[in-house]
Image (cartoon, rainbow, N blue to C red):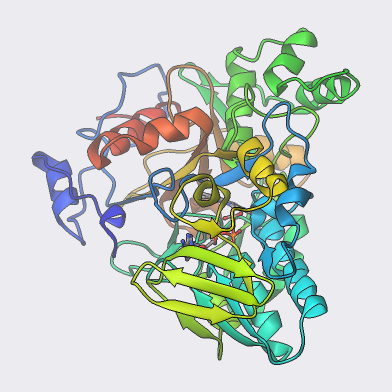
Length: 472
Ligand SMILES: Cc1cc2nc3c(=O)[nH]c(=O)nc-3n(C[C@H](O)[C@H](O)[C@H](O)COP(=O)(O)OP(=O)(O)OC[C@H]3O[C@@H](n4cnc5c(N)ncnc54)[C@H](O)[C@@H]3O)c2cc1C
């Protein structure tokens, strides 16, 4: 268990118990009542989870942010420039190199397949290939290359596989692993869904959305005005941000309903609408998604079975010439290879922890500085009892919308107020467990990441206010 999976901040009272124990005693929870009249802001004194986990990708030295995004004014082709091989010695993969689905599991996986093809075309059978990074892109590439007869070594800075996919397995705290990184799958992720099925990783369907403000249920906010504003902005002579595109269309991005919708977009793409390009916009997440409920580490174990993997081995230097590649590992070792596949996140390439000698070509450096790294953070809360819901009629509404039996909506949107986390996933309808997952993107995610554990938990509880059944 990592520090982040268990709160260890200082404090007294009921929260102190949670902070100090792996298996906190069931904490008193308020009695649900149908009364949804505006109530005082909930605090960790009145609403205490039995388990809490959070991510902190913003400060993680081997991520330095959550996902890449295309900022206003940058061409998506910067990703092709980043993906271009250098002298047939250096090859690049990772979500940031995928033009069609950057910032996603699908994009990472596809980039791993693409780069394996490139390396195989450039080299001969049995070559020594190094892969830097054991995330989805690196593991996919390494598996393909090893299966084709290459002598592959994967260097991974962390002491675990998976990179920005991170399942926290702790049976005492969670009924299923808490996912601190990428996990939700939609229609384009069929390959991954099949892999999970083959590995017997359970998955829950997520569908239906509830929108609530402090005053009660709010009409669902449609994506259509945003999509129309983006479509209109795509005809402009210069790129504008999604915020600007909306303003030009007569909409107010600060209007609470629209702001909650845009917060949901930031929670999946990592970028605020004020920063994201309307020429190359992040897609809205699909209405129906699947939440894997198992240890996603199994995917990486399977991919890297039989492949030589060196964990806790941060690569600090990549030197290359026409004869080959030499890697400097932070532990002091230096190793030679025929070719290397670099899959570290864009945030790492933008930092100074990984040096290239000679320096990368201008095309690569231009792409690295033009593309942006966005923020997404996740909080997981488990309660001993059901303390929050989408509201008494939400199930009926969701069922009516879908023309199906009443099913409680899985996605919650917090409208108005000063909530830091506006997008929540309620896993109780699909799992029967009182687990809520808050996802926040853009500047609010960076703000959350800067808080200590106690304040982050307080921000999460306060954000949930419109959905709390009652507060004691
Ligand atoms: C909070 C969050 C939620 C997300 N939600 C979703 C989602 O629901 N659905 C979805 O499709 N996508 C989601 N994503 C995006 C998805 O997780 C990523 O796009 C994908 O995992 C990236 O894979 P990758 O292989 O490109 O990079 P990574 O997984 O980051 O792999 C790169 C690897 O390189 C390693 N590394 C870094 N520096 C060095 C070094 N110097 N030496 C050696 N190794 C190094 C890292 O430790 C890492 O293991 C989410 C991401 C985050 C952060």
